[in-house]
Image 1 (cartoon, rainbow, N blue to C red):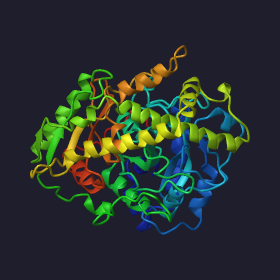
Image 2 (image 1 turned 90 degrees about the horizontal axis):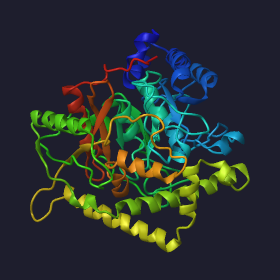
Image 3 (image 1 turned 180 degrees about the vertical axis):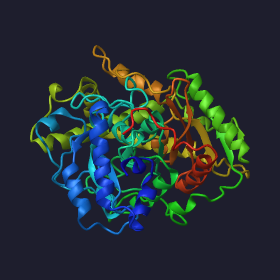
Image 4 (image 1 turned 90 degrees about the vertical axis):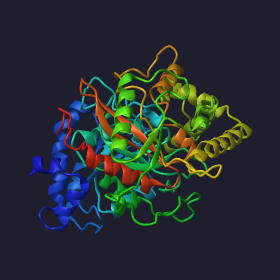
Length: 484
């Protein structure tokens, strides 16, 4: 039964429970056995919740769409009262900090019937696109253990790829759903700004870059999870436009004949794009054309604004300063250089030096950039805008572990990240939804995703097209060798 369940997505597992063919405890116990088998090799789960999960599965569960399905929460946001929440930081780990509240998001997952079996590894405060925190050590990619899982949701994405759970919590402030999903050959959707709640401790006015979601194997899983999560919380300051119907209903719907632009080169000029990533885009473009869509080489030129890295960095560093202030309150003392990693300290010092005026200027620049870029998707000059933009998800296949750390000049690690993932963070600035679709593998067996971006609020269109691609070129049966 364990082997059979390993091959099922969350939707299929939940269906077995509804039909009475499998019990929640059987699903959860199978996931725990898988975690115990694979985690020593890959270091993905850093806080085990195995016994509590088994006990929970044997009790009364909400009658939600995923009743009894095991899940993992990333150890960054999605906090649960009374449980560890260390955000990849050694000071929080050493203090054995446990959360004093349960986030809205975690409650949404519980209400949907999911059973959490543990928390996954993440880089310190989610700062870089790899999961190698000093506090817990590196997570390893199941396709090649010498390579990065991506970040900051690297533990979650690799746990799904390795077969521990069918779906795992993830969030995205600069690519942190899409980057690890691409590195692990899984499906990842970054929702529109305001689609999911960040309460009760955060919100999209103070942290406009970050959104919450998941990494999964199937499009239908992600669509149904998004339905479960996209319930506005009281007082939520930004709420994305409501969908015309449930997102799960969009799977299998004909998207029509779409106009799709393509961006193959690095718009930020931070480095070249690997031939494998360009090839992945070319293959996806050909597949989309074979499905009846119109594909050409236009793209939103406002995206190459050279100041965009500055806008993002100001918001990123200021957000880090606010996050560290919360962490200091959690442990009851101020942090010094020995309490965080060298790169974190350098970025923290930058964030603490940003004035209120500079922060507001960055927010205004973000909004202007968003208007300029987003206009490419809208009708203009009396003609029709584009429906989707196709890009590489990353500029390189998964890179070796250690790529983003420079002991002598720590900030070079962050600059290296800009070369690795130049296509992601811009859409955290605009707030638009984007997906990475696993359509390509290198000759050596490394996964390479492609990104599709829609207009704000149009997750429905991304789900339709992604499901169309999934049906035309299935990926679920492509599994890494290091799999439970």
